[in-house]
Length: 215
Image (cartoon, rainbow, N blue to C red):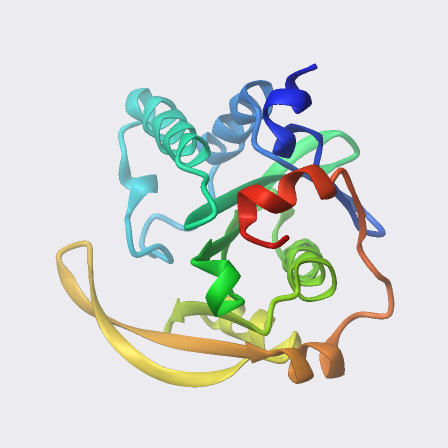
C-alpha cells in the first residue's frame, strides 16, 4: 500500500458535500482539465503567480511539476498539503494547507482555487472550512493566515465569513504591475466563533502527524 510509505495518501477530509484528499496523479489529471476549462476571466488575475496565463499546451506540464515538487518537499520544517477537492467523485479544484516550522509556530496558511463552473455555490467556503477544521481541531494550530488582492472581492468576502480579520497590506508584482494584496488573519477564538454548524470528518491523519511537526 502506498499509504504505508507515504502517509498523506491515506488522508481524507469529508464535509457535507465534498471530499478532500492530498493530490495524487490521476486526480491531478482531472485538476488540469478543470483549469483548462477556465478559472477566472481573462482580464482578471487573482493569483500572485499568474500560472493560468500559460499557453494551453504548457499549462498541464507546469501544474504537474509544481504539485510534484510540493509533494516531494513535505517535511516537518516546511510542508504543503495540496488537497484535491471532489464533488460526487469529480475533481473541481484544490485547497492547500501549508505550515512552516509548525511544531514551533503553530501557524498555517491557505490557498485555493475552483474551476469556474463550480464557483458561486459555496464550495470555496466549504473546502476552506474543512482545512481550517483540520488545522485547529486536529493539528493544534493557533493561527491561520491568508491573503487576496484588494480587487478580489469574492475571496475577501469568503475569508471574512469564516472570521478572518485584516492584517495590513503589501504590494506585489502582478503581470508586471504593482498590485495591493490584503493580508488576513484568523485566530483560534475567531475560528470557533465563525465555524460552520457541521464538523469536518478526518480519517488517516495519525500516520501523517510526524511529517507535519504535529506530534
